[in-house]
Length: 291
Image (cartoon, rainbow, N blue to C red; front, side):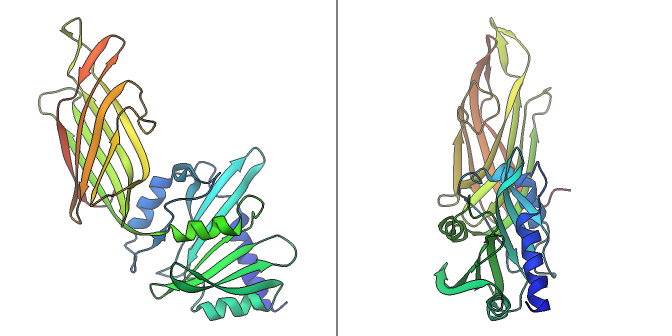
C-alpha cells in the first residue's frame, strides 16, 4: 500500500476508533466550536441513530486540520469502552478527488452516490477493520463522515446523520436577578444552528409559601439539545423530561434573532407542601461567547 495511503488509513483509524472523553458534554462542544467563528459556518450533527442519539453525552470535539478545519465525534460507551462511533471532519483533503484517489489505491470499494443534494463517494473497506466513509464537497470544503464500528452504525445510519447536519450559529448568554430578592433569577446559555437551539436555562423564585407564610425558595434547570426552531421560536414544557426537578408546571419559550434570544418563563409547582409561582420572568440572551 502506498505510504500516503498508509498515513491516511492510520489517521482515519485514530479518528474513528480512539476513545473520546468518557464524559463528553455536547453543549460545551458546540459552544467551543462556535467560539472559533469559522467561516463558512461548520456543519454539526442535529440527530444520530441509537445508541448515539443523546447528543448531550455523545457529542465531543476531535482533532481538525488547518484554520478552517475541525473534527467532531459521536461516541457511545459500553462496559468495555466505546462500541459505536461516528466521526465528522472538515479540512483533511483539498478535494474529494484527492480523498477518493488515496483510498481507491487500497483495500476500499468506491461507489458514487448523492448526499445532501451533492455528488458524493461511499468507501467501504474490503479487509481488516470494517470501515464506512462518505466524502462530499459543501461550502467549498471537503467533508467526510465515517465509522469504524459498522456493527452498530450502518451505512444507512451514517447517511441519515449526514443528511441531518446543520450550520452552526452563535453563542448567546443572558442573566436576570430580581432586585431586592434572594433567589429570584433567570439565566440562559444557548447556542444555535440554523434550525435548532441547544442550551441550559436555570431559574429560581422566592415566591413560595407554606400554609400562607413565606417559605424557602425553589428552582430548577432545563437542559436541551437540538430543540427545533419554528419560525424563529421555540418552547418546552416545565413538566417534561428536559427539566431536572420534577413538580414544575408551565413553559419556557424563546424567540431568536441574530442579535439576541428573548427567553420567557412562567412556572408554578408544589414542593414538600410549599407552593411556588415564578410569575412572568424574562431575560434577553445577547450574542456573545462564554468565557
